[in-house]
Length: 100
Image (tube, rainbow, N blue to C red; front, side):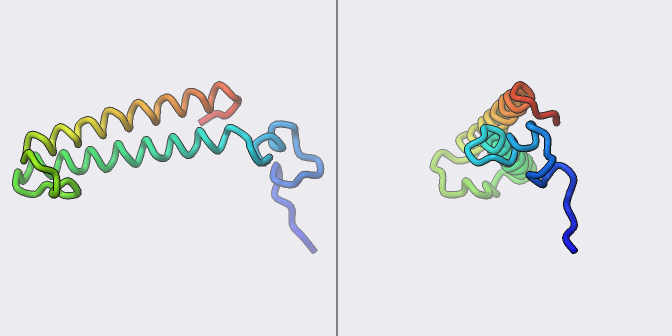
């Protein structure tokens, strides 16, 4: 006996479900970009907060020359870039038919 998950089987699935499951679809690209953007946002925010609380602890950017100013700038840029990428990817995914 096999159990079928609604919307995931090819037999009787809607066209939208087939499109999401088909290889080469653009949905996966936008999901990956959104995940990358959120990860960049979280790592940048965590690093910036760590740097502001303890100026001597640069975290992942300890190797970066320039001290506090350089590392806090890179962390803030990571937060901004992550927010822009995640927002853009979410908007594009919604445009092609995904809600989320």
